[in-house]
Image (cartoon, rainbow, N blue to C red; front, side, top):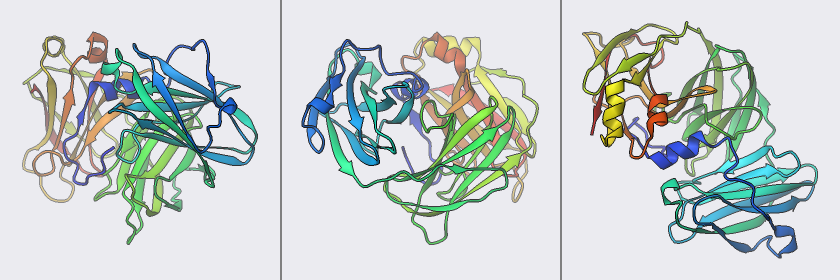
Length: 386
């Protein structure tokens, strides 16, 4: 995950897109036998493992003692890219997951349980295009003094404060109603070296598909995310520091006015679409038109998406466009790429690697145009092949 300021252009590969959207499901079919780490002298040592040729997962089971913590690291071998998920063995519920930790290809999770339980560890290959070859890794288990911070209940109008250490996180939980728009702003306290980041998940754990995320949308390195609740239920907000950053923070939760759903518009390559973003939580959605999908499927390569302010408006209140690329999912729009000022001046620009995307992925591809904070004005959206 990049924490670079300034909202520069970001490129998303197919393997990362697939890994993100399939994150809610177990990584592979049940194996005939799980490797029992309790029968091996593994805690504090290295256990070598391998994901078999053709994909799937390497699976392990182990006991977590009551009120004990374990730090679990899956280290890549020979350039591999492992992803790890941990499940409660009794209920099959997801406990923790991680792909790339602190800017490396290693995966890292910390496990703790107040009561004794058994867990199942699944290690898969995040580099899906390399699934036809075995993937080797080292599973490292170390005792830890870490204890998770209690999940904090979040309500509209609240502004809880806290401190994040390196590689730390703080979880917040809120009950959302369908159609609500939550305006979440995570800011570093003045003098703090924290580079804040936000993610939102459905359910009571920070696992499964990321429904919304932001790194630098709140000005400077601060994060700001407007999240529209897709279905009534419990949602979890994950606040953390990018890379090795740490420090004090404030999380503000406000309500943005929910607007009626905007009709989905088709857009073709090289044919700009125009519109006007009003004050509030206005947002416009686009999908690739039939000819655009055919061109991409035929090998157009990367898609370059530009969102530009048009007209004479300048200064305070003039449109500062925000651009997102994602997919339509059963839980609503899932944002995978976002940008604020990656184009010239305050305009937004994103590049999406479409190599290998099939027809179903292209059909579900969505582009969202919105405005930063209380800015408004006319825009022009252009999608072109690279």
